[in-house]
Amino acid sequence: MITFQNVTKTYKGSTVALRDCSIDIDKGEFVFLVGPSGSGKTTFIRLLLREEIPSSGRIWEAGKEIGHLSKWRIPYLRRNIGCVFQDFRLLPNRTVFENVAFALEVIGRPKHVIASQVPQVLDLVGLTKKSGNLPGELSGGEQQRVAVARAFVNRPLILLADEPTGNLDPTTSLGIMRLLDRINRTGTTVVVATHDAGMVDQMRRRVIELDHGTMVRDQARGMYGLDSAVSAAGAGSPTGTIMEPSTAPVARPGAQAPIPGLADSADRPGRRGVES
Amino acid sequence: MPVSAGYVAREATTNLWRNRLMTAAAVLTVAVSLALVGSALLLKQGATNATVHWQHGVNVAVWVNGDASPAQYHAIGAELAQNPLVKSCIARSQAYDYNEARQTVAADEFNATQQSDYPSSYRCVLQNPSDATAVVQQFTGKPGIFGTPSSPTAQIRTMESVIHILQWVFLSVAVVLLLSASVLILNTIRMAIFARRREVSVMKLVGATNWFIRLPFMAEGLIQGLLGSAVAVLVVLGLYWGIGLDTTKTAANQGNLIAQMSMGTWEVAATCILVGVVGIGVGVAGSALAVRRFLDV
Image (tube, each protein chain N blue to C red):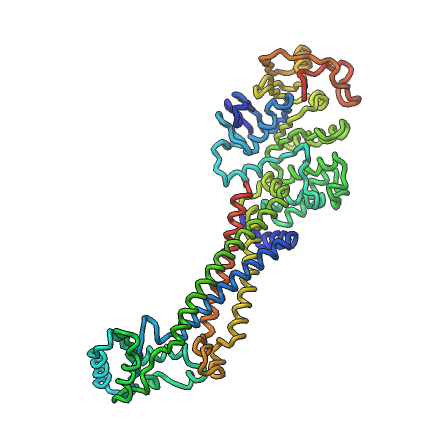
């Protein structure tokens, strides 16, 4: 579904955001993209949205090589991709229903399709009762559900989420992750860029770790930190590649308090690296 | 993907209303400049009609009786050609004079006549325009000549030059105003784009085509241009009826300059259409520029 082949992305001023990345993500996979700020997660998402083009290397998405996609085809590519952001990006003067319907309206879906699909997806995210409310009247978690509903209402092949729980408390985050998981079970490929260690450790899905633009780990059923990954691998977890980063990780035991009821907090290992 | 006209109209009018002060400024500027353009065109048309016999430097028009024999007609032509005061002559048929009268004679008067009632004519350019009176005298009363040959009065010549200057003043002021109208429209659209940047970013995210995003903004400029030109058309029509340039009033204005400047409905219609087209052009140009420059899709 998604293939990166030796992708390098350099921004002006020779900042390397992504260095020689080769990744394959199959249809229906759920992938966590982890790494500290500035590691290239957002660039990864922006490349997939074709908001950026790779400086070198090639990217295939839904069967198309998107690096050389002509400009007028980009909107059609994006119709196959749903996207959720940390800041929700809802339209404040439109109701929940209208926000979700907007995604269908602007791609020219007829009214009867909108009338049937929007309530379905609002039901999926559990916001049927709030469909007439404005985003400002909703909690952060509810707003993010609206954003997920909007991203999914068009039944995209791929759902991208850039720090979807970055603004939410742990319990609410869990709800969002469960929602993404449900969407993944419908066959949609889900890629989540996140800092949320608890979430990654709890979900135990494929983890791709980036550090300074380099992919340092690609592990099936991985955990957030490298230490936890190693211990998990040692405990006989499914296959995965663990690449040693060029710089030795700095262990920070107990850097983040365990979240009760979310992760197996009993023997939760410390997180690697320093986040800013 | 087809973009629904209803959607575009709805979005454009909502935006215009949200930004109504700027819209009003842009529409008024378009209106004033186009009213000037329209007036200049009316003036030009009026001047052309008033001086219709005197175009191409014609100094004397010799009218030949409609029922004069071909021999008489040619004799007059030959005489004019040999006259030392005359530089050159153009022969005009009855049909030509009849069509010319359509512009210069009051409508009801014109309708009461037919082509055979009109003379044919020779339009002559003289070696020296000041000899016009002499030529007129020489040909008055000759066999086959209809009435008295005409020559333009000094008034007509003065009017021609004044109108010529006025027309250029109007047109140059109008061009400057049209430029500022385009810039105002551009600015209105830019503000609209800025006000809707969230919506635009969401639209791009969910895969709206570039045209779907652009068209409402373009329509906004188009509507501003249209509104402005509508006001300008009203001004032009007001001028036309207000000062009695329509041929139905020619009889009442008999003899004065306005009667000579009178014109048919189609000439005013053409002026209005031109004003409309320029208005639409200015609106579309301003918004297209804004969309290209400020809407990164």
